[in-house]
Image 1 (cartoon, rainbow, N blue to C red):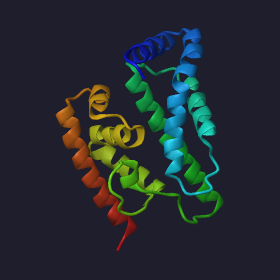
Image 2 (image 1 turned 90 degrees about the horizontal axis):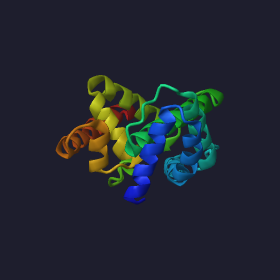
Image 3 (image 1 turned 60 degrees about the vertical axis):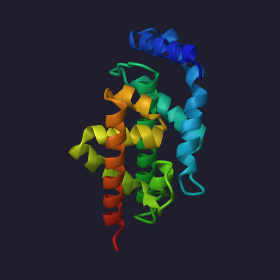
Length: 192
């Protein structure tokens, strides 16, 4: 995506935020392919036979976006960060309802390493990962946000720094620290 496209998306987000409904109509085709890619990436990490499809995940995202009038879009990276976080929440909600239906049977597994594009080191329960991220957010909200943006959205260090409002070096240190903390916590959750 070129610089002009990024600026156009940011302009449309701000216009939509200001109440211009036509900006949303222009925005949807410009972001749909990237949102489909994000949704496919999330669903590729899910267990085989997952009942959600990328299009359904993107549609649910748009339902939540359109229904949320309190958002103040700063830029394209902020929008995609919010979109990825919302997709993660949709999948966690789906996993919870699946577990409720199955009365506690096996949870959907994803690899934290795979999500973070690291060397593989075992499966992580999506619900356990979500719980660990919530615990991390209680300890350090910025680190939890950096994990979401880097691991789930796939933002670069530069883009993550822009969204969070800190330097690249701070993002790099926080990212390393958060990964180590999550690995330790998820190891505890899976037990010996």
